[in-house]
Image 1 (cartoon, one colour):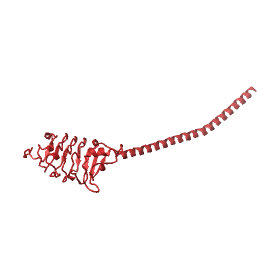
Image 2 (cartoon, rainbow, N blue to C red):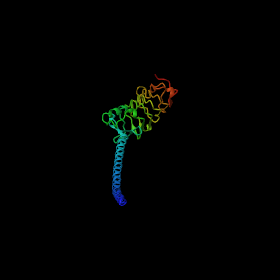
Image 3 (cartoon, rainbow, N blue to C red):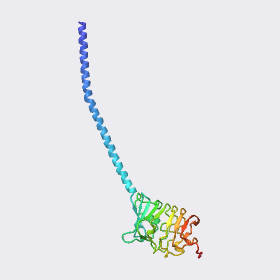
Image 4 (cartoon, rainbow, N blue to C red):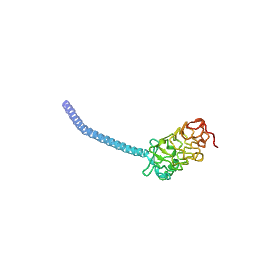
Length: 251
């Protein structure tokens, strides 16, 4: 009888264990997929959030880049100017071309025009004169009668393209025009008509302080190395094309 009782007891325990195992198995089957779905949902939301964040960041970066590369117009800040003057920050180039009404370039030096514009252009778009590394004259323009210091004090200016498009017929004063352009290396002014310039005072020190100049082409000017045109320039370090070696000093 004891044996039968033990068998019944063992069988009962076995049935209970099986039932528990079945229940637990059922719970496991039901719970694990639910947890998996929850994890997938969380991961999907995180992925979606990250994607949206990346999109916003890209849009902000694109907007900032657009602002940084936006050309800055300083045409209205040069006295008597009809030309269009726009600075391209992506190339560090100041572009100059004829305007709608005429091709007359104002008498205000570029350096001063930039600072005049500073009062009216937003800080994030504004630039400094020292940001100008290149000048590109893109169409025919005419200098004003007073053009002294016109391209002066642009300390990082390396070159000026399109000087052959400049009409100097009405220019009288071009003194210190390229003063202290310390990075400027070459100037070809052979196409300029200098007949309207005063021989001494009005072209005084045109290249003064241009310590990087290695070549100036003044063919047709009839200048002498002793002229005031070269005041402030070490002519022993610059190749000057077109000066008159035979002329005597008129001083």
